[in-house]
Length: 111
Image (cartoon, rainbow, N blue to C red; front, top):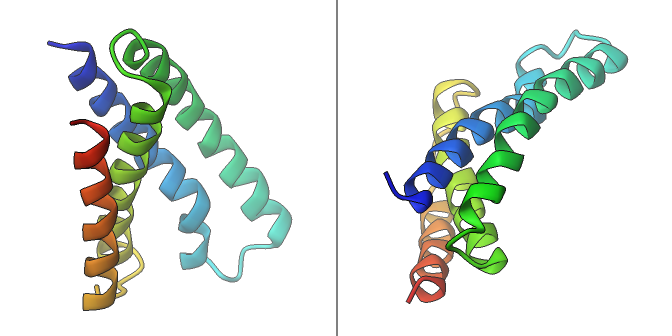
């Protein structure tokens, strides 16, 4: 498996944790703020345990710019799934267009 694929897999997994850390507490509105912060921080720690190796492995063959653009695209894919499945928010066409433009940037960065 190439470094780029390993990186993408690790970034995908890390983004599952980060999206949960950033937005998961929105499902539990009665949770006190300090608990939401502490819980999010603990989940984010797991994200860092995947993100750092992803960037180290990826930087063997990809530039830092390519890593960042790949990470942002993966973040959007993970977030859309999270927003639809967990937060029950519908996807609007304006968001799809916005994401499409970001994915176009990924194509440009990797050409």
